[in-house]
Structures are given as C-alpha cells and as structure tokens.
Length: 297
Image (cartoon, rainbow, N blue to C red; front, side, top):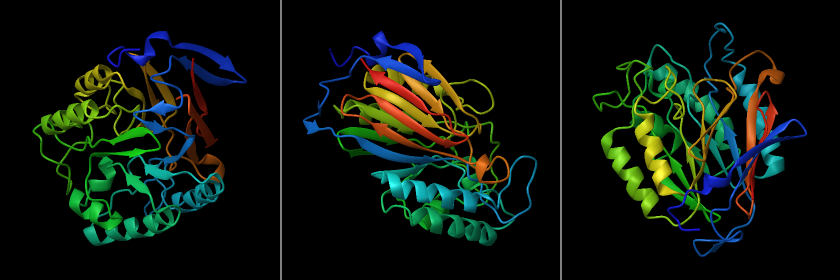
C-alpha cells in the first residue's frame, strides 16, 4: 500500500463477545515497520483524575482518585506496560499555587511510582492555578507537546491548552470551552508526522472528534493533518469523562472514562492498550472503562 493511501479504507465493524471490534487493513508489513521489528507493546492509560483534597462536588469525588489510582497501579504492575500516559486533568483547581502544588505532589507520587517512563498530557484543570511551566517542572517533563518512538510505533502528545489568541492557559486566564492548537503546534505536528515512517498513535486531552464544548475549536484542522499523514492508527483522549468512540476518515478517536467520577473503587476507570505486531489494537478497560478491539485485516 502506498503510504499516502489511508489505512482505514477497508475498515469494518462487528461485535465479538459484547466488545466492539473494528477491522482495518494493515498499514505496513505486519512485523516490520520503519525498519524496526514490532513486538506487542503495552501502554497504561489513565485520565481525568481531578485529584484534590476537597469535598465531593456533584459526581466528582476528588479525594478518592488517590485510592483509585493505587488500584490501577497494582493492575499496571501485573501487566507491566512499557510506559504510562496520563491524558490530562491530573489535578483539580485550588485557590492558591501552594495548595495546587500540594495536590500535584500527592497524586504524582503514586503515579510516578508505577513506571519511570511516563507522559503527561496537559488538561485545562492542570493549569487552572499553575502555569504550564510550573506543572511540567513538578512532574519532570520538558515539553507540553512532543513525540517519541517505542517498539516501532510513533507516539504524539498534543497540547490544546491555548486560547484562540494563542495565549497559553495558566493562572485562570482562560475559558475551558476555548481550547485550541495554535498554528506553530499545527506546523510542528505536520512536519513531525511527515518525518516518521512508523504507524502513529496520538494522545490528547480535549476532544478532536466533536464540535461541542469539550472539543478543540480547530479540531477539523488537526484531523486533516492526521488524515493526510496516512499513518495514524488512533487518537486517545479524555476531557468529557465518558466512554465514546468515533471513526473519522479511518482513524479511531477513543475517549476514555474519567477516574474521578463516582464514589468507590467500582466507579473508577483505567485501561491497558496493546499494540500487536500486525498493528491491531486491543484496549482492555477496567472498572467503568469500556474495552475495544481494532483488528488488522
């Protein structure tokens, strides 16, 4: 298949044992991608923990995210993923920088103990009181958007925490409905995808597949770049706190359930993504997270 022919041209859906299964044509040779031998790659995923030492508000039980994450940690230690991704809103808002830093230090101590290879997607609540620099410095991450390779797969972390005028979120200077990926990041994304010959998985916080309040306002521009690359297998995102799945232009946009919603461990949600040698994707969901499988034809 020519690399500009999109891999989703022959996708089909069917149900198997109650799990949505999507079949897709292979992007490249089943076991050799970009010159690298591809073995099964496991990735741990969590999102929207909203940890804070404060009383519940509505369905959000902020303090309980710590125990929920501890349970997820036990599962991840059994599954031994190559790396972890936190898809945004690790913490909730506080009235001061000092208190907010305390929330972050507490929840990240548990998260950091799971794996040395960790990646943090910025959510709007991460930078409600803090600046991006303060949040990233606290978790030991250099950039808010970047890419990396693992096991023959190219991974992209996006940052949509920018206002329409390009100003980065921070210190309560934004409306959460005004999420954007600025031109400089779009240019970077296009060049980054063009420079890789590997299959791609994208991580985001705000949704790229819808047009309501939880979406990136210029999501259509982002989707066009992903489509044109011809190499994007799936996008994993959070923000709207619900299980959801959209298939757009042959790319799977999978929204993961929030960990903060509901009281008790049974109300949690987290998942393990497995990327198989034939480029099929298997998402095993725990607690309220739905499982999904995308098969390579």
